Length: 116
Image 1 (tube, one colour):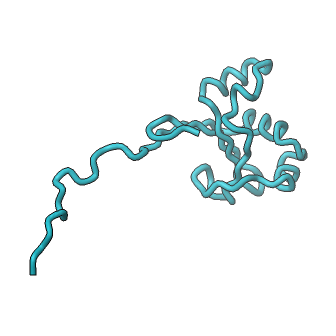
Image 2 (cartoon, one colour):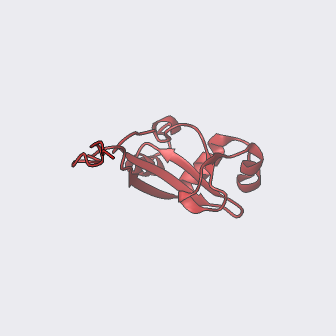
Image 3 (cartoon, helix red, strand yellow):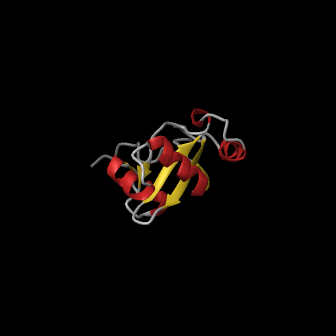
């Protein structure tokens, strides 16, 4: 996954009982795959993990989806098949993480020892 100020792109799928998230290389990679299914999933998906957010949308705490959850929602235990359905039906979301850049205390205030 990207670090710092790198863009982070994911696909969010709102299922019947759960919200699912997968991370992807880019919005363009997903759109290219949707137009040409001969593109391998490995060139689209950023790590072969499916996450659930416990019905908190795309911004919830991410936990790995269990095979039982995948089977209940997608009628398959195959993560690849579930990912295909998420890529087909989900919503692409791109965001930029703020990272740890920038100055936090330019004045250096609070660094002076105070006498009693």
